[in-house]
Length: 392
Image (cartoon, rainbow, N blue to C red; front, side):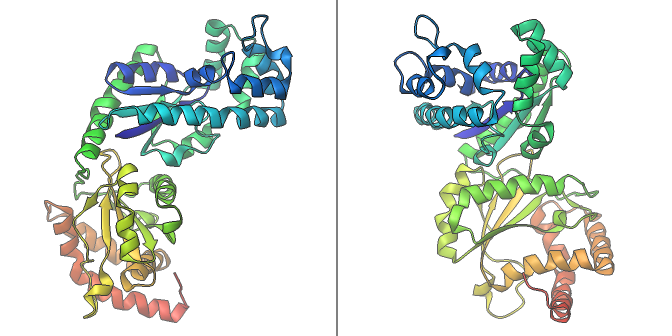
C-alpha cells in the first residue's frame, strides 16, 4: 500500500487532482467528505460543535449550518483552534477506518485540506501540493462558489502560507492555468512517478539511481529536510538521531542526485526492528550490510543496515548505523570536514568528476572507484577532527 498526502489551499484545484487520481485507480480518502460525514445530525461531532459554539450554528432541520459555523470560527484564532480540536480526531479516526478497509496493494490518496496546518506531512511517503496564485483562488471562490470577497480572503488567510506548503511539498502542481492543464499534469505525475512508486513498494524494490554526477542543487537541503522529518516520524524513539549526510549535504558540491540520510540507532537489533516501519514509509531494505571503507580489522564495527527509497522521483539511501561505531561517526565527520575545508572539497570534486567520466554502470561501481582516495581521506579527516576538537 502506498499512501499519498494531497493538499492545497482553498480554491487551488485540489479536487480536480483527486478526481483524476480516482479515475486512474487511486482510492481517494477525502477529508472534506469525511468532515461532513462526522457532523451529520445525530453524531457526536455535531453535538460537540453545538456545545462549543451554540445552537445558532444549526439549520431549522437540525443539520449543521456551515456558513454560520465558518462565520463564527474562522475569523477568531481561539475559536478556530477549538473547531480543529473537535474535528481533527473525528476525521482522523474515520480516515483510519477507510484505509484499513482498502486492499493491500492500493494507492491511497488522502485528500487533506489542512495537512500542513495539522503537521501531518511526515506521515506520508509522498506529499503533493496543488497551488494557484492567491488572486486566482479569490476569483474562483467568488465566481464559482459564491463567497464574498471578505469571506474568501478570511478563509485563505486562515490557512497555511505558500512558504509553509512548499516546505512539505515533494511535488508542486501549479494550477494557475486551465483545468485541462492540471488534469494533464496530474496524469503525467501518476504514470511517471506514482504508479512506479506503488509498484516498487508492492515488490519491495528500491528505485534505481543512475550513477551520474550532476551540478550541485540548492534544493537538496530542503528535500533532505523532508526526508529527515519523514524518517524521524517513521522511526520514532528508536532513532537516536537522523542526519543528512553525503555529498548532497555539502553546499556547492556536485554529486549524484541521490540523497543520503543516516539514522543512528542503539544497536543493529533495533535497526532490524525498523524494517516494517521504513517499508511503510517507502524505504525497502537492500543489500549492503557493511560499509566498503573499513579502516580496521574490526569489520563488525563497520556493519550497518541499508534501505533505499522506492520513489523514482527522489532516489534516497538510508543508512542505519549504531551510535558511536566508527562508520556512524565518520559519516558525520566526513560531511563536516568537507564543509570546513575548501581544498579537500575541491580535491574530492576533482575525484568525483574523474570517476564519473569512466561511466560506471552501478552506484556500487561508482563508490568502489572512489575508495582509494577515501581511505587516505579517512586519516586526514580524523587528524582535522583531533586538531579542531570536532564532535558529532
